Image (cartoon, rainbow over all chains, first blue to last red; front, side, top):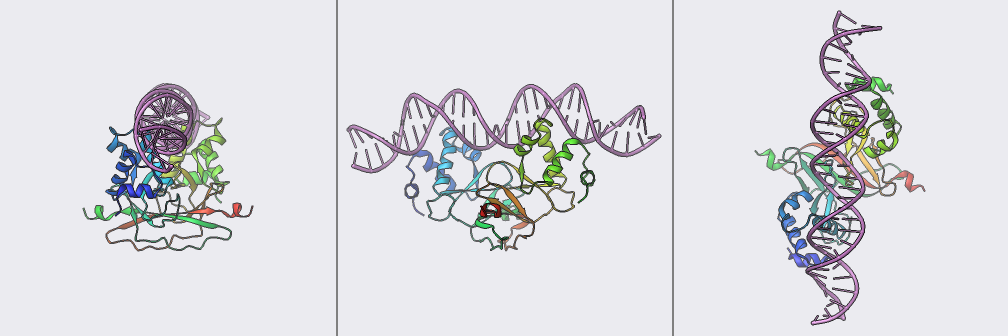
Length: 139
Length: 139
DNA sequence: ACCACTTTTGCAACTTTATTGCATTTCAAG
DNA sequence: CTTGAAATGCAATAAAGTTGCAAAAGTGGT
C-alpha cells in the first residue's frame, strides 16, 4: 500500500493534517464511516466543518465513495482503484447488517448485468444488500 | 384499482383527509416523492409534522416504501402489492435520472440473484440504477 | 345517532445533519 | 523565502426530521 502522502498527491489534494488523519482512519476501518464517526474521533483535533469539507474533497477527488442507504446519514468508504475522478465507476456491492448496522463493501462481488427498458441509459449502479453480516451471524 | 378508503382500511389505517389526499397524490405520480414535494402541495391544508407522520404510517403499514439514494432526503413510492407489513419484500429496481433527478420504480425488473460470501445472510436487496431516463433521453 | 375510547392532528419547541461567509492560517511552487 | 492559492476555524444559518402535549376527529358498540 502506498503511503498516505503519496495517495493524497495522486488525488490532487494538498497534504494537511486533517487529511492524513482521516485517510489513515478510513484505511484502518473495514466498514463505512459517517461524519459523526469521524467527529467522535477527531472532535478535539479538528473542527466539524473541516471534517465535512475533508469528506467532500475526498469524494470529489475519487478517494471516497458515498454509499446510498435509507438512514438519511451520509456514509463513506474508500475507493479501491486509482481513479482521481468523482463518480468514476467502482462497481461493487454494499452490505448493510440489520444487527450491527454497519455497511461493508463487498469488493469481490460485481453487480450483475441488467436489461433496462427502452430509452433508459444506465451510467452507474448501486446494489445494497441488507441482512446479517458474517460477524453477527457467528455470535 | 380499489378506491382510496378501501386501500387505507386494508392497511389498517383510519380514514382521514390527509391520508386520502396524500395517497391519491402518490397514485397520480409516476416518480418517487419527498416530504418537501408533499409540503409544497399541501402546505396550506396540512401541517408539515402531519405530513411526516402520514408518511411514517404509510411506511409502517406497507403502503409505501422508502428508496435509498445518496441525496440525504427520504424518497417514497407506492408499493405494488397487498402486503400490510413494513419491510415486506417488494423486490424491484429503482432508476434515478441524472438530468431530472426523479426516481422511478421499474416494477418489471427483478433484482438478479447474487452469491454472497460465506456466513452472510441476505434478507433484502436494493438496486438503484443511475443514468438518463426515457423522458430526458427523448428531449 | 350517540357515547366512550382511541388515534390523529396542529402547534411549538427542539435535535440532528449539513452548508455558507469570512478572516486567519497553512501549503507548496518557483 | 516569498507569494498566491487553498485550507482551516469560528459563527451563523439552513434543511430535514422528531417529540410532547392539548385539542380535534375517527370508529366500534349500543
